[in-house]
Image (tube, rainbow, N blue to C red; front, side):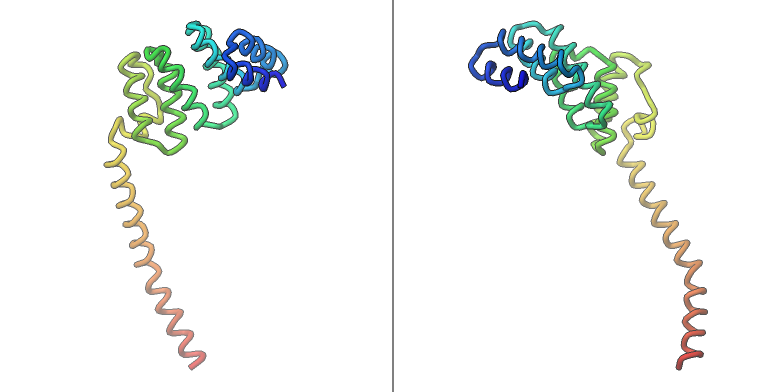
Length: 171
């Protein structure tokens, strides 16, 4: 109910009332990422960027804990617009993009984080080959094809033997 009141207040241009409603919604359910994001949006409109970043970070952590990496990445983008110099957010954004299979974007986020803080490198970045994702993917596909042909060559004599037995017994 409070969330809806906040949305209506925001539509009517009543930012203070909207903020009060979102705060009340958060008091009732501190794990509501929607209210936290809307609170952040209102705070941006009120030029209270540090408070907005805090609200967005709480929302992002909730989305991350729920495994909703798409929402997490979207909220991380809002945080980065406020302060693009926070390596931990860039790294976590990279992690979310990695989990969504958006490897090129993940590499970009990791690269930005590492430029700001060289200790931000992590296993996902290493697995992506520090930007060599396409080369690694191509090599992995080649390896899978090689294994497939190897297994096929091992099974071919067995198939021929069984085919011969079948034709001898039933023809």
